[in-house]
Length: 573
Image (cartoon, rainbow, N blue to C red; front, side):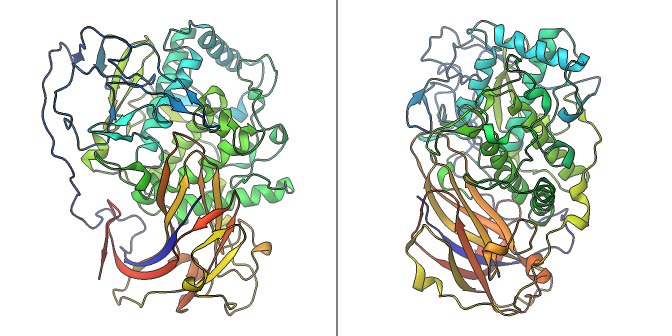
């Protein structure tokens, strides 16, 4: 269930679209950095005698309890998984699943240093039966044929994602907190490394170091359906029977899909998708915090952070739920749930395109990476193509040419301002609606609209106003989604390509039973300008539930304050 209150913040903001020097705020250091030493050679960590319970290896991570300093806060500033043990993950149907493979004996630091750069191509451009297709299917089939004890085995590789995202690890230094690579600034770099090593394993298995994984470019019309190579033959290693049967080709993907949505005309759906991409990549992604997500540090409880960045929520989450199938919402399968998502080969094409969004945001939209050391020094552990465990850091994956790949230059139609959402023709005055205090607490089992007062103008000139839905509370094992509209007098007439549709909040089922309390923010200054509502002293906010009923414990209010670009710190005046 979910509860929230909404806060609209008035935020002084640089006049440049992506400020090069964002305002500085004090870093919140919860724990000191404690140095440690260990006996090792050539950058290796030797755990000594190990057994199944000495080492946590969610097929992505491991550490011996004897290899680290006895001080539990060693390297405590970045959020790190604790590799001393591995616990069972939890499926959405509440049953446990073991994602922990056998433990190796050594870990080696890894820094990429590619001398050649290969090109990842669009999956839609690959023809069934082509040389590339044959190499790709050969690599995946060989991966599936490996011994289950081999960490490069396809199912074991899927377990990497399961352990890192479904509660296989606890947070280092905070054993009562589960570690999580979703819903924070770790989302993009972790998945970049994950796809990278999966690609390296493919290269090794077919003895071709020029091979690259394809990307599913669902952000362009030619890619807005499941690529034929993943659905060409039920005996193909790229096929997965647990995809939604209603969404097989030639059905056009819905990048804002909710359970129960009715399919619309393909041409109209493409228009909606392009508008969604414009909104998520441009209107709502002006800063690193917007794009990457909330800072996640040692001692942080992931269940109380502001959470995911724009792209992780939409379209990432919705591509998962649209592709995966479920008998009902309580037990989604494969792409529809994080514990099983990587069991479908299309997962890696999906995340290659998510990774491509990172490069587009930097290279085409003037975005910038974080410079915070707690982000740069965060590390993960994966198995490489030699079946050896390696430790990698975020700072070493920022230049993809050093990782040895780039992306095919394909059209990016949503960069065109013509697809920008447009206001819906309607009344020029806001309809009447109750004050939040008259509505909450309540249960969001039907549409709810409230009139929210805006903050007084700060007089600082350039500013950014933020609507924050604060205190969203739910069980992370459940599918959760609700849509948000502003100044919309008829939500039944509004569509994703209308300015009034701000977007949605969503949660992909994953992890142990855990109540999450988080926030969702929307930038609304540009939206209000386009709606001709810049001078309104109030806004109409409408919430539309798209999942099981959501409980609203608080309400909505507006405040003015300073917004910390790097850490989302709010300082009220």
